Length: 446
Ligand code: DLL
Image (tube, rainbow, N blue to C red):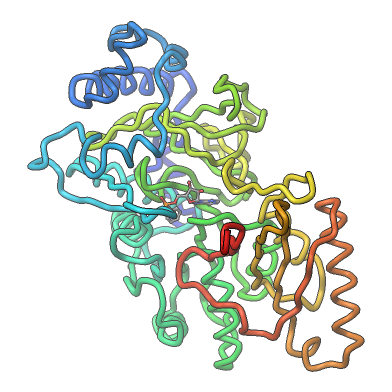
């Protein structure tokens, strides 16, 4: 049965996908064996981890069952900053074949490392990601994730090659050339951030290229939050199926989890990344189905194992079986992070709520920014959103009508009124990678 699935090239399955279909007991055995090995590796080679284990009276032998993971200390982003650049490496530099870094918002980047084996695991989970999105040998994947220290470009590149697809390593930016190659190379799939793809849609229209008439059938998007409304916009405008993929540098890069054809949650490649959901306030473990902070443990990483890493990404685990047949669990799409919330007049606000509201209003474009300011100690928020040329060129009435509907949609979702500025198409900067949705001016002039 499984062999049939994997041989079905048109269905996108690939031999590397085998672990996606493991029976639960076999999966748990693999997880426990790997967990014990990775805890030993970190204990013996990473001073910070060893000290924290000792403080709790733990040794690697304390891990006898999978549930014992809950005794282990968490790792947080500050640990990577405090040990910058190489303090969490578990192997000598001579075994490290690759470094990546993620810029972060302030100061020094965080650095991550890979051995040869780690790169192989990464290629495998990215091949499984692409297979999950229905890709196979014979597909032409245009890789518009940035190549460089960012993990998106090289992660997708190695995965596509491992799958046997043809990869076009164009990286981010150079949008006119992107559109030319999509057309001339018969590109069947493209990967980039969802915000960059909305720009490619816009640019293709300006160049008179109808993406819907081309062979492009799949978009593989991630690295930033995006809503179902954004997905509907992308799928309709480009005539493709848009898949959500998730990952983070600290764990491996892209390749931690991926949607499948059902588009109902992202399958976590659990044989390599052990997921837990915790209450972000208390750190207590929550059962499947409950929403909380995602914590991940790398089960096979050698150069830089991460034990119980607090991602700050908020989601919940889905344990019900998926119609695609994969047995590995899924997580719901990440709509927010525990650290991207702001409080406006006593109400908790997340940027994704604003996106959901504005995409529901006709006449707006999916290009927006949230501006935060502080007035007499109170946080204020205003939203700048582009409207279509037809609305903008008008005719005060159309503009006023869109403004009124938008104000209502935002009030409906957030429960408060916020400042609104409707702006001309192209007035908000386009991004080639992760979009900057929030401009925080709260501490300016303070
Ligand atoms: O963004 C890795 C990646 C590259 C993922 C390409 C997917 C595709 P970082 O730059 O370290 O790594 O950023 C990781 O981005 O903790 C989330 O907050 C956010 N993120 C990543 N994927 C998604 C997604 C890459 N699909 C941080 N939905 C993570 C929502 C996402 N947020």
